[in-house]
Length: 194
Image (cartoon, rainbow, N blue to C red; front, side):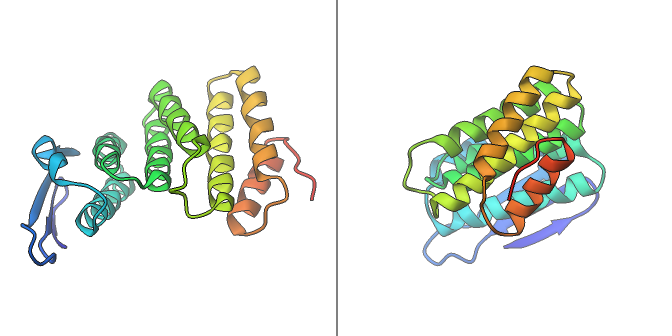
């Protein structure tokens, strides 16, 4: 993958796949050009995953540069690309990142919708998740995000519902991500016994 960038433009060129034409995606101010033309070429292959990774990095860079509006546009494009794959965990994680970006941009209703789509994916009975433990931890993380969002929107009933669900999902799971979720839930008053 080749990248060229300035403050508002980024070009991703995927050309390292023998026997496949290169893909060139241009980003300008958070708008992905040529996506409709590109979507039929995508599927569960290395090019799609490389493109998704490149767009994920671009969205993170835009957010880091203080441009959450442009980052959210890139994340929306990334969700469309991931819909061409069976990688439900990647799609759910992208939706979670989109929700965070939208929240930071003050677009709270859209953030909630992105989080809820991620929850639906993580609860879906699919075998395309790496393992049930990963799915459960990520579900707890998205439910934590919904708890924080409900608190920001002054919705105590939603905050309680999502907080209890997150606490149940994280349960006694082990690992750094579970510990981080547990710590944040404790801070919010949803003490998770160990």
